[in-house]
Length: 186
Image (cartoon, rainbow, N blue to C red; front, side, top):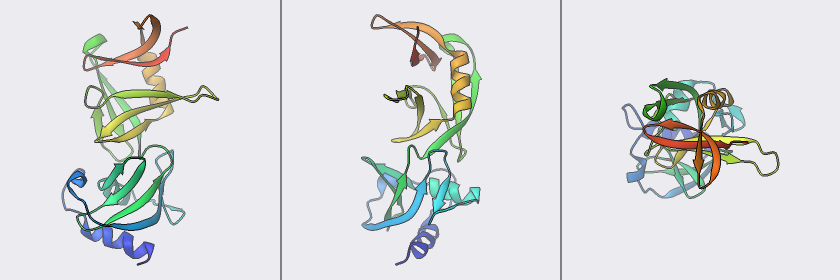
């Protein structure tokens, strides 16, 4: 079956409803990889061409699953592999409610998913060992993360407060009573 036929077949199998499909319940046979890639900036590509229709991207984003380091599009009867350069989603906006330890941070992704940072949706920051550039993430659903866009990360930096953790000074943000370090304080 061609990649195009596989993609059309996947679309035909999608459940009709809002929100992510229950892909964690489905265990179909692996049908091979298709030429679909999610770039670091959140752009979805099919056969090297950006998918320009947001409703199409949203549809595919509802059937993505991560198993280990691999990503798949899953339906009840088919499982195909795709490539993800970094994270499958990008957090493009941030809403802040409250202040201090009672503060709530709500992120919205490029596919309109929302997650409030907290125990179920933790924040984390990876530091590139060569460039020392931070890559911040929020867990959006199951084991699927969103890379936090640079502008949104700058908003987090503006909200950061100092706190000592294991004898070291950190800057971080509060959400739902959890403190998330985003960088060491100098």
